[in-house]
Image (cartoon, rainbow, N blue to C red; front, side, top):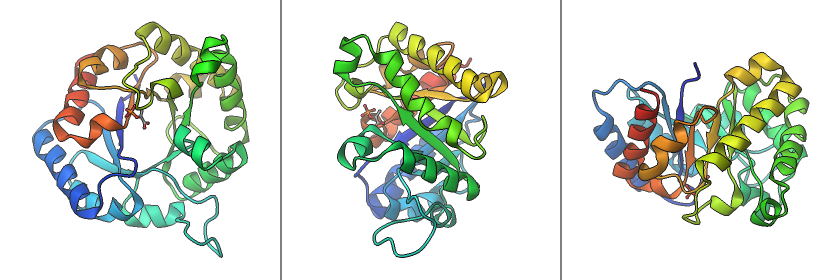
Length: 256
Ligand code: PEP
């Protein structure tokens, strides 16, 4: 049985004060509840200590949205996984489609980052997914396979506990358009098959594969209830405590 993970990607929103306030509001709504899964919020770097301080002692963990592909040295503006760990992060998102697009990040850098994340004792959330034109051309599975094959076999110590996958069809991110349950389940099951081929059947069976793309309280239960969907990586809807907790409620109901 895979434990669900509901992860909020706050993107470029919520500085330390606003982030702590949002984390506190989420904590208050979850107070006294024993959850069946894991809950994570990923604020901007500078808000990680403030959010982690609020999260200490409650079920909400803190993560980062990115990290350097080097551990230290002359890399102006970068933040390493070990620094993120010291600041309170437990997970780091890698290869989000916005970074693939705007920062032109490549597989080599994803591999370097995830290896450093693992060396620091943190968990990586590796994002992948096809663009609209690729889906329309019938290439969704081929794109997803290439993205997984470009990174997973090159990792030094990936297993089902230090690595989480996040299938995020680019056409569904921030657009209000969500993959249908059939589309999501198809790619998730296919991804699990690819992971099995690359890392072995046991890893594939236990590795969590999150869905991301306009997930909200109204569709969370159905999506997270799909056989190969083990939670969500969510952007916009996690900026309001009630909506974030509504998605957690959906995950709880789906795992009931
Ligand atoms: C994301 O940023 O990973 C994401 C899925 O965003 P949204 O939920 O806003 O579509």
